[in-house]
Amino acid sequence: MDEASPKISVEYFDNATVVFLSEENILRERDITAIESSVMPLIEKTDGVNLIINFRNVKFLTSSALGLLIRISKKAYENNGKMLLCTISPKIYQIFEITRLDKVFSIYDTQAQALESVE
Amino acid sequence: MVSKSIEIKSQSSEMEKVCREILGEAVSSGFSEDDVFAIHLALEEAFINAVKHGNKDDLNKKISIDYIISDDKFEITVSDEGEGFHPDVVPDPRSDENICKSSGRGLLLIRSYMDKVEYSEKGNAILMVKNKTKGNL
Image (cartoon, rainbow over all chains, first blue to last red; front, side):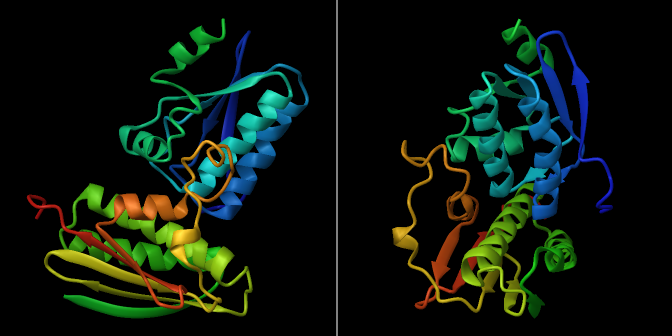
């Protein structure tokens, strides 16, 4: 994997910022660090950002990625915003269910539904 | 049957090649996509625990991976050079007081995805077994 490859892409909507995770696998410390350093400024620089993380490309993740989501969610909340997740594959969703994080995070089947929830 | 022992440096970059090799052998041996997903997740989590909690990020230490792939199951042991731990004292990451912590979910995932999990007496080696799902030969 090329360490210089983009780990995320970003799309801006009126009421939300959507982050697409570019990698299929989110497991190595360097991946986590790269995503964290790209995402955190999006919620730190502006107050009250609704951050939607789109998992449509993600096929595999580890508990380190779950820890990253916890940190992003806390940071968004501290800055009067919130984090939402969408388009999570059934296999990945099972990891959220096992860890009970499906009860903690706001998870939507589609990006449209996530966007609708913050209108 | 496949039986191998590998020793690698205790750092994340060492794991990629080993992981590809092991998972490739699991696929070749007829394990289903779901089985390989489970083995991959357990292996990654065990490795992360060995690097961080076992070897305390000491790059001079090693991690041993021993695995046996037979007709009906995949057995893998990940050992580190650390002091070991007692699995019963690891807090439940699903409890209300821990649910928002950013770490501590690795063992839960290993136990959830593998069919059998055992620890060495010292607590620095974890044996994980995945039974082959029937009907995916």
